[in-house]
Amino acid sequence: MTEVTTVTADPEGRRGDLHVGWIMPPFFHELPVDAEDADEVGERLGELVRTILAEGSEDDQITMFALYFQITAQLADAGAEYAGFCLMDMDGRRSTATVAVYRMSLEKITAGEALSEAYSALRRAYPDDDVQISALPVGKGDSQAVVRIGGAPFTITAEASPTGEPLEVPRGQIQVYIPLPNDADMLVFELSTPSMEDWDLYSELFATIVRTLDWATEEEAEMASALSQAQPVPDVAPDPAVVQELYAHSSRVLDALGVRGRMDEGNAVSAVTCVDCWSKGLRSVCTARHHWQIDGVEDAELAVAVGRLEETFQGQGWFTLSGTPGQSVSLAADGDSGHRVNVTLISGRQRLVIEVIAPCTRIVRGPVDSAFG
Image 1: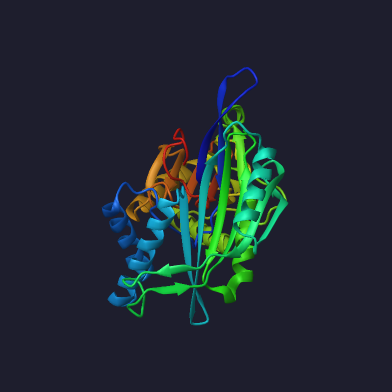
Image 2: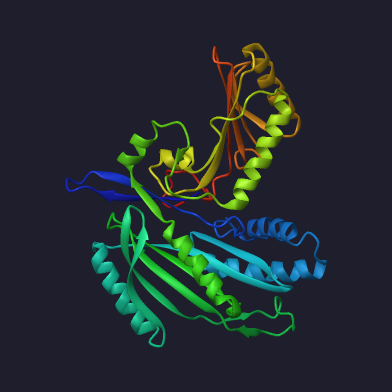
């Protein structure tokens, strides 16, 4: 989850927090715009490039590193609070796009006044671009935003250019300016892509990202934090690829438990808001859950199975988050960022309840009490 904590004041002058989040597709890779210095940028970006181009040549890795080092520096200098890019294969042709998010503080003006000022400023700065005020279905309902669509060519330095000379590259850009309801901040979402042949694809993808913007007051977050389980979201279908992964992990759980009973009840896959997001008052879908159960097996046998599952998954690199021996266990893959498995024995009912939860698709950076992110 990408989270923002912004500050507002009520009519009596007391200050409170506004938690803001949005969802990035899992195939976007985060750029280190929050790095402390160039050495940290190089270290984190180098690791990312080696992961993405693990099968690529050293020259390809060097070229990609130089290009995105330049892009990261430009975005950080512009004040980006988040930036990520995708690199996709379109039938043998590489295609890329970058998404950045900025925050602008509003100085003693309302959201409506901020919209008007942004609209006027963009019309003056980009007279040839399409600039409009539009309604966006975000947060708790529709929100007004200024949308700019136009060109933003950039120059690749000689070090990053495949020709060894500075190279100007045409690039399309969409910017969406969204005042937050605290009348204190405006978020700017920005999509940039040089792959103009894929403009329709990226435009639709970007619209989906912006529509996931969600927020909650500190009071809403405090009320929601009392709930301790992932919350289903009605009438939202989980992503098919995510569902396939959930079934694969559930199959591994069943194999590790090593028991066979009835499994004809309680089997459901749901789109959900994860515990962490729900506790902050964010309600948009961020993951999916496979809930199922095993019935008709003696409690003693199920208790042994819970311990066997924990031991097996620990041997595969999973971590135990909590649990009661022979009664329940909560496990996580890849530290705190992977799939989670919760297993609970319902004593006296000969029933074992299993939840397999996919990773949250929001991106989390920084402590929740920071000024931004």
